[in-house]
Image (cartoon, rainbow, N blue to C red; front, side, top):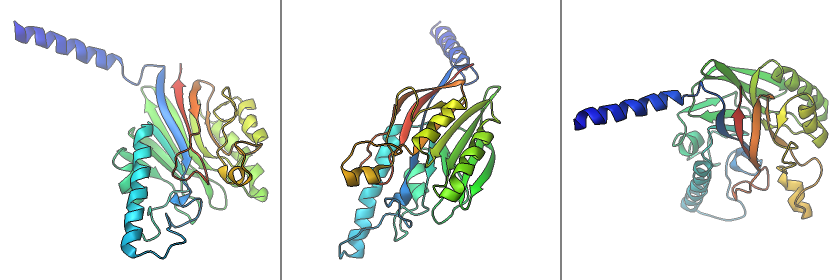
Length: 276
């Protein structure tokens, strides 16, 4: 009798679990975008120990401690989809620690990379399997890494992008990104837009939902000039954003200090709700 009772309970549990699969909407995902600045405040080459005549062993131990701080932060965010800009293959300038292995592989089964350039290197880390991986270049080294997330019969397009700041390239890249995003019914686009406030608002005017400049207001992520002037915010310092199609809601937005790379960029984190 006990075996029969246990079997019935197990069957009910399985039925409940099957009934809560991702093909049902709405679905909530925790997402985030972070320009990690090559782990070196925007300078290429990985974490560098500056201004100190240190031994190799000291530098290695210092890099290990900093790396553990990054790993702890990534774990604490518990992101379903983590967008990365300005990644670096190695965490440190001495090329001792492989950044993907140390920081992402403990938490993510699927890690997708675009082309690696000196300054521009975009990625997507997730525990979902993504398909149809492709790239679209804007100008120079700047590009978008694009992939599809299939949830039941719905296809959600995920974009990890970095737009150029250079005047001769920027406006055209913004237009190109908008044209690309309009191709998809379900869209989550994240990254460093290098955009003015007016341009961030334009994404909203074009029919998309936006985290930075949207219903919760502004979140400064370009920290360098603010810190140098002793300010907490100022116009056109809201460089990074999460943009979704109108059928995906954005809630619970933050651009927190990390104590990791705060002089360069802050991340943008949010809950997104995929609706019918």
